[in-house]
Image (cartoon, rainbow, N blue to C red):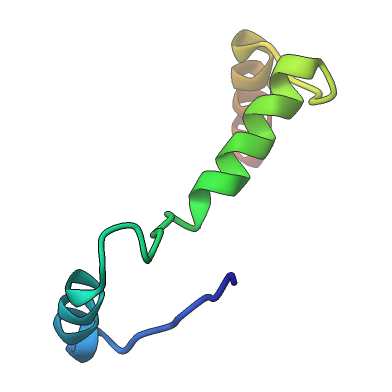
Length: 69
């Protein structure tokens, strides 16, 4: 079963203690960003993600800033 918990900061230590008291392997804790990062890396490596060369991106930013002057 997959479950997401939102725990109030003042109860974090109690939740951590509870999880630590369970048998080894009973709970898998994942960083919520892990799936998103893996998805984006896969898109980049497969060529599905549109990318912009750094110099082009910086030039675009510079042009926008100059236009504001």
